Image 1 (tube, rainbow, N blue to C red):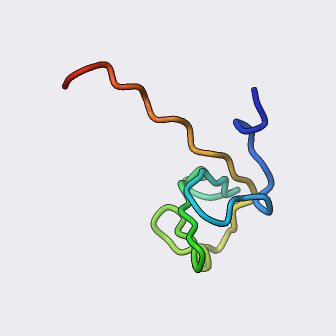
Image 2: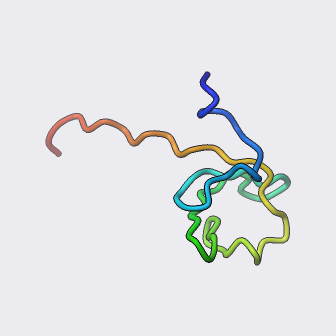
Length: 70
C-alpha cells in the first residue's frame, strides 16, 4: 500500500481541496472534508463547530470507471 493510501497526521492535510478525515469516537468516524482558504466543512458541519477534531486524513479514492452507457 502506498503512502498516499494510508492515514496521515491531520497536521499534514492539504490546505485546499477534498479528502477523507478520521474523527476518533465520532458517530461517523470517517467523513469527507472540503477545505477552502478560509474554512473547512467536515461532513455537514464547519470544522470549528466539531467537539472532537479529526486526527488523520487520507486522499479520496479514485471514482469508479464507467462501464459504458447507462
